[in-house]
Length: 54
Image (cartoon, rainbow, N blue to C red; front, side, top):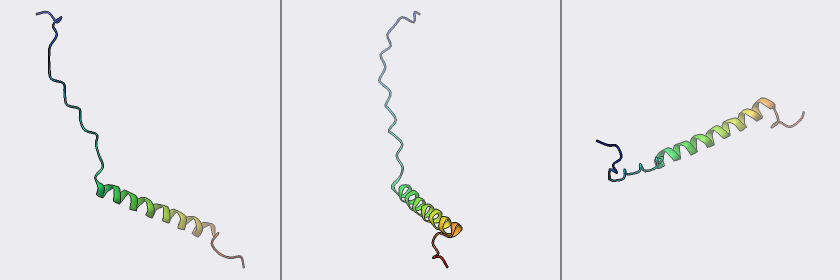
């Protein structure tokens, strides 16, 4: 047979975009806040910027 034939097929359904579950968004947000607080605490603890001069 010739390949010069139009084949009519149903269009394939597009996959829906992958979405993050709400509980994972909440966990990632809390983890980000805790990481930021830990980084701020470590900065002031290691640099000694938070203590008044003696």
